[in-house]
Amino acid sequence: MAVTGMDVTSQDLTLHCFLEVSAGDWAPALAFWLGVRRRLRDDVGIPVRRELHAVDFLSGRGNPSLESSWNRSKAERLRARLRLVEAVAGVPISLSITYGDGGQRSAVYRAGLNDLDRRLSRSLDHGLVMVDGDGTDPAYPDAHRELDLRSRRVVEDPWRQGSNSNQWIVTANFVAYLAFQDLRRNKPALQGWYAQYFSDQNVHGGPRRFS
Image (tube, rainbow, N blue to C red; front, side, top):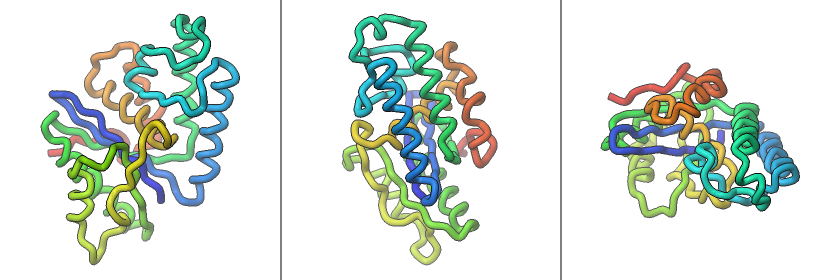
């Protein structure tokens, strides 16, 4: 199983999302997503390799398209946002979300990782975790190295990939950001998008609070 991890943190809330895809589904799922990006390029001028940060794209900020008229159209941007979110929801994924207070980032990741490892053990599967970052944050590898080598199912330290070059990081970012907004409720325009599009894929039925 390939697993993409993504966190979103503010002063009062930190959230970590694991987006999971089976090894057998990985290639067709990636092909589907790349097809969506190519159609978006052809229809509205957003390059396939353009880095799409959820905090900007879903909030309608920046100029992701090569067409200036599209960038200025709120209606066109909303249609594209919905189109991408619906596309992510159409990828054969499952996910889990753990959240806690703003200062609990490392603990929230550890709790989510331990839950993932237990579920992989029950399904007799193994998983490789991919995360965004440049490798300077010790929180992720430290959590992996705390797993019991005699029984762990998560393979190796997390695999670092940048959101500018990896499409799975982009998709996990979208899901994590929408879940964060459903919990924090500070962007009414995005309220309910996570529940509408992704609640069925959550292995626990919804985000779980770390305590």
